[in-house]
Length: 357
View 1 (cartoon, rainbow, N blue to C red):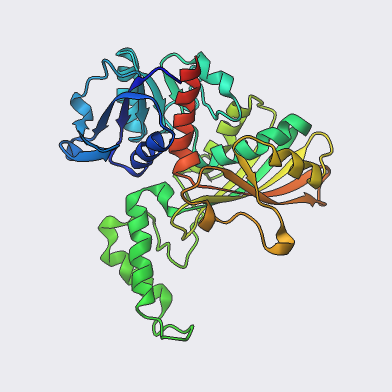
View 2 (cartoon, helix red, strand yellow; view 1 turned 135 degrees about the vertical axis):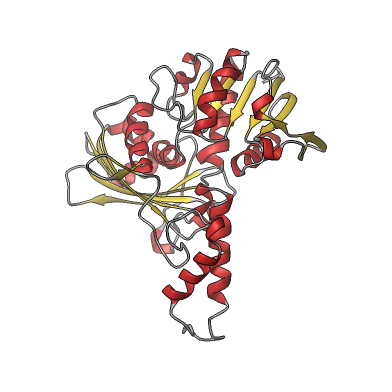
């Protein structure tokens, strides 16, 4: 990648925007110039990048002329308005929102899975949902080896996937709960539900979830859809998986749960393959798979943990074992940093694909 390109980041002041900046520097992405763009309330803020200050521009008035690659991470509604504008002014947009993911004219790309799709873009490339990305990175090598008939996935998604306010909500609830524990004892001196309810109400303007998330699990990410009451997040995993894997015959069922973890998403993934695939063979395949790190020595208590995945790039896979309840069944445990591989890193890898051409 000798050619240097002019880069714009829309949503530069958000969590994904900050992670984009970090990874661009880490990977020595060939930047000729960098512009940081966000909503009007962030206009004029200054962001440090590689030893220099960059003033944040207002998206509403920003021109994209002269930008080669524009990373968008400012939400679906803004992407619907401004991504076509940026593409019309000559930028290739890599969009991290849900705005264009299921548009048949827009490629939905995970470089380890369907890199060829990126080259068919018409100015906009969609970055998949974080939970979908880590799952398909783990499953594509197994799909290539034995085919996949069915996927049943349950996700355990960290609060950072819901933004800075969600991280703050968990932080405040943990602090409030910790203040009521007796030193050296597991007992708490008040009713936990009542206490967390009070903390929740006191910080309601800064909360994201419909309930306290500390000491809790919330089986609800995105709005409920249709007669079957699957959530938006669950349906994203269904339809995005089919599009990325380029196989509409794969049956997918998802349950997405928000958990009191700050960073990194975890997933239990149960698959039924078309051809027999032994667990040992699956381990050998995944040990060589791009973007995957095999962590699977359960007898030594070695398996993927969100605690260790945060701040790292690989998709970690472990707990690989036969599912004796169905023919050709396998279980896997998949963990990845949702802000890195689940968002910013995947977008940058797409840009790197484009630069190879």
